[in-house]
Image (cartoon, rainbow, N blue to C red; front, top):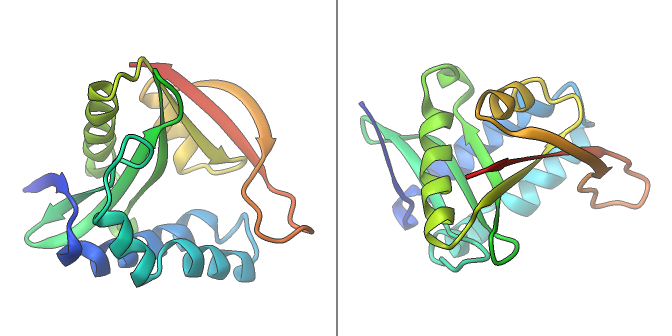
Length: 168
């Protein structure tokens, strides 16, 4: 049975494993290998993840994890970007566990936290062409808003991020 809980330091390696596998499974056909490796190195390294499971503010509500039989099978988190606006920053599950409701349960936990913080609207940015994330968010009531430059950590990288929002 899958349970959702706030992550702590005992979940760091599981978060790194799930988010790394999720990055590869989601983006291997959209990004270069070098880009994916840089993103993983920047966002899913032990020091950063440990800091992020040890911190919880309105700006970053901390990680939530999906646990099944003692193993992290999904991880996600978000924060507030305004007085009444929340944002989903990260949401990944073990690629072998897609379709089991893990992402839905994590999104519900993130949403509940953001509503407690005062969110009335929730946002998410998804890489254009991400055919794993976009249908998921649309099914959860997110509506297309706009496109913008996506996250790039080198000047010559041009990725497009698609913005979606929903009322919560």
